[in-house]
Length: 472
Picture 1 (cartoon, helix red, strand yellow):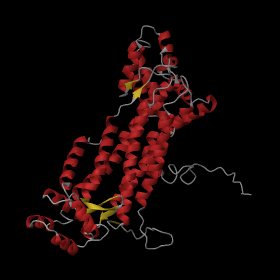
Picture 2: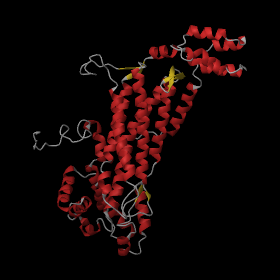
Picture 3: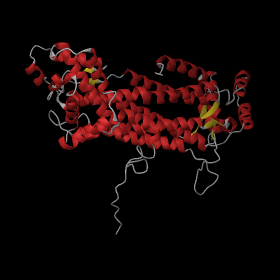
Picture 4: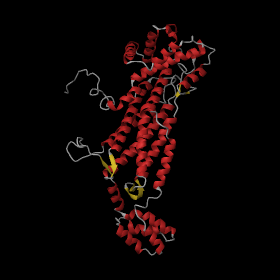
């Protein structure tokens, strides 16, 4: 029988249950400031304080002095860990996290000049009014301050490599088999273009908020203050948070905006899985070489190994992130009748999904900074089999009226590895006009790259137009 360990271990990197707060904590510390429970409590306090202040605009409560306004504005941003421990202590007895925030604010303001308005804290609201805004603010701020800068850095790196190698010929493969030439920069810019489009979608996405009470009808607010236009009040309040208004809701705000947000990340993650796997293959083929650091070890038993672990780590974490996102997409649109609480524990994992994703973005970028193209090997493999020019040859022959050149070239090249010399021999045997033969003899895998460099340039121009200068 296995020995039972009853020791209580204090929380630190070595004792954390998940690798996000353990092994990878140092890489995610900045994200944690926006998506941890610490941030959730802080933003809840901020929303409650903003709502209390907004009530003055419609005469629901008295006007505040400049000092009182400054105090309310500081409550969220200046909340300390000690303050939040007080909130958690209150929650231990209330068993309700949002109510604990309300009680904390009541106690805090009761010792100030705002003690006469403490009964208006959380007035007419339901917990979901505070929560739906808090989570969206957390996601918005994490996106702007942590995740987008990371994605932009990765995009910048891809753009730079695409430009540098836009005219570097390399062998393209379809179905895993040698196809025709392309350029290294063109294949990299495909990923840059795809990534840029999703980053642009992230930047333009707007969250929608709800501030309408227990079942979305403003019941408590309107029965207390019939003359206030509460939907208009809510619209203004939400606009100040940079949210649109969800007009018709139950107790729960609709999740479609958050789902759209995460589905963009799902697409980004899929794009980068595709990229990681391609880079893995390029490294395996020797087309990219990895930086060797003397103190690093690739294998516990094979001393010579230098493994593509950054791209493999990224691929694994992208899969973890996507698995969680997939559950969000299936779970969050569904809530029994006007509300059930099964979403509450799910949305606490928003930070985990984005944490795994951010780890992957960092790993992919780290991988790119540790590799460089092996141009000699890329050229050797490109020139190894000249049968990749069969497409070009049969197209030129068709243009010049040769009957069924596809079958002709198929019979001469399929299943064989054609050297440069053999290719020249094949062309010389063809019964075609000398001008056409001359055109075929001038073909080379290094030159048969189509409009790849021009495509790179045009694509980079499009990417540049879509980009917004990141905040410093």
